[in-house]
Amino acid sequence: MTRIVPAIAILLAMFPASLSAETRVPATNAEVQLSFAPVVERAAPAVVNIYATQVVAERVSPFFDDPFFSQFFRDFGTVRPREKNSLGSGVIVGDGLVVSNFHVVENATEIRVVLADRREFDGALVLADERADLAVIRLEGGEDLPALDFADSDALAVGDLVLAIGNPFGVGQTVSSGIVSGLARSGRGGGAFNAASYFIQTDAPINPGNSGGALVDMSGRLVGINTQIVTRSGGSNGIGFAIPANLVARVVAQAAAGEASFIRPWAGLEVQPIDADMANALGLDRPQGVLVRALADGSPFAEAGVAPGDVILAMDGQPVNAPAELVFRLSLQEMGSMVPVTLRTGTEEHIVAVEMRAATSAGDGLGQGAVSFTAAGPFQGLVLQDLTPDLSARLGLRSSTGGGVVVMGIDNPRSARNFQPGDIITEVNGVEIHGLAELTELASEDRRTWKLVIERRGGRVYLTWRG
Image (tube, rainbow, N blue to C red; front, side):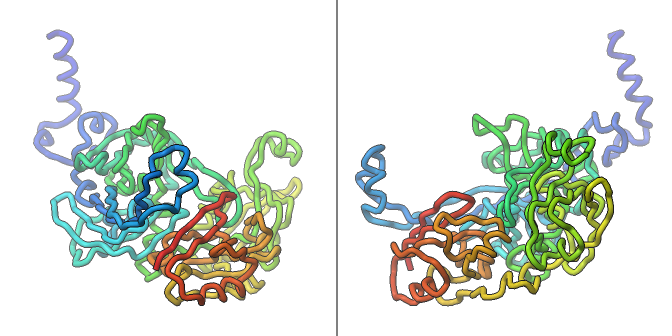
C-alpha cells in the first residue's frame, strides 16, 4: 500500500476534482496516458464499413487444380459468373462523400456502406484513382452525417500519437493506437505513370479490413487513410502505411467538383534519386533532392528555366528527395497556380516559379491526337493515343515492341475498370498493334469475346473481355 498511495496522490493532484466526471479531449501528455476515449468518441462515428460486391468470371475446368495441365488449359472449360464480396473501411468527409481505398471498391457492381450507428446506405463510386489507391463514394440519401476534418499531414512529426480506426477481419469497428514511426515513405519511382507511393508510416496495428479506415491525431482529425502493411504472416507486424490527408483532401475536392478521375499537374520531366556518390560529384554535403535527367519540350519546368543536370531540392517549401515525392508534391497543387521550386544549378541555389497545368494543355502535342472511345466494347471509356518514340520518352514508358497504343486517361472508370493510365495495348485478338489506326479498325468488329495483351510497369497482362 505504501507504494500505491503516492501514485494515487499524484494523479489526484494532476486533475482537479471538478474534472473527475468530465469527458474531454486529453490536453496534456499525462492526460493522454489515462484514456483515448474522448478522441474515439469524436472520430469513430465518421468511420464506416464498406461492403463491395464484384461479379467475376470463373472458369470451370477439370484441369483447374492440376499444377501441370492448368498452365496449358487456361481457356478450357465453361465460364460462369460468380459474386465476390470484399470488406473494407471508409471515412465520411462531408457532403455525403466517403473516401476509401481504390482496392476496396475496385470493379464493384454494388457498394453498401454501414455507419457506426448501424445505419446503411447504398454508395455510388464518383471518383477512382488507382495510382493513389483512393476512391470517393457518394452516399445515396446521406445527409447530416458525422464527418472528420482534415489535419495538415505536413505538420506531422515522427513520434506523434495516432489512432487507427477500421474494421479488421470483419470483427466490427476497432481502434488501435500507436505513433507516427516514419514520414515520406516512398515506393517505386519511374516515369509519369509509375511513381506511385508516398506514405505515413505507423506502428498502430492495421489488419485486413482496416484498408480505407482512418488514421487520426489526438484532436480527432484525419491525418491519413490506412492503405497497406508490411507483413509475412498476413497480420500486423507494426509496419503500416497511410495515405497523407493533404493528398486525400485534394482528391475529395476534385470529386466534389464533379471529376471522375484525379487530375494531376503535368511534370514533363524525368528525375532520379541522388545517392552518396552522386551527391559528392554534385558538390552536395549530403544526398538530397532529385536530379533532372530530361525534360519534354513545352514542359512547365523547362519553361521555368529548369535544365538537365539541375537538382530539385524542394517544391512549395517542402523537401523533395525521391521521384515519388515529386509526384506527391505536384498532386497537392492547384491547377493554374504558380508554385515555387527550389533548384541547385552548379553550386548555386535559386527559386523558380512553375505553372501547374494538365498535360493536355501543355501545347506541345502531348494529348493531341488522343481519341476517346465511347462505343460499347473493351475500349469504352478510354482515352487512347499512339505511343510514338517522343511520347514514350516524355511519359517514361517503354514498349517491348517499340510501338502500341497508350492509355492516356479514363473517362469512365466503371466501363474501363480493367485498364490503368499508362497501359500500353500491344495486341488485340492475336493481331499486333502498332497504332490507333489498327486498333480503331479492330474495335469496329462485332465480336463477343476479345483477347488483349497490354504492357504495364514492365510486365505483360493478358485480358479477356466478353460482351
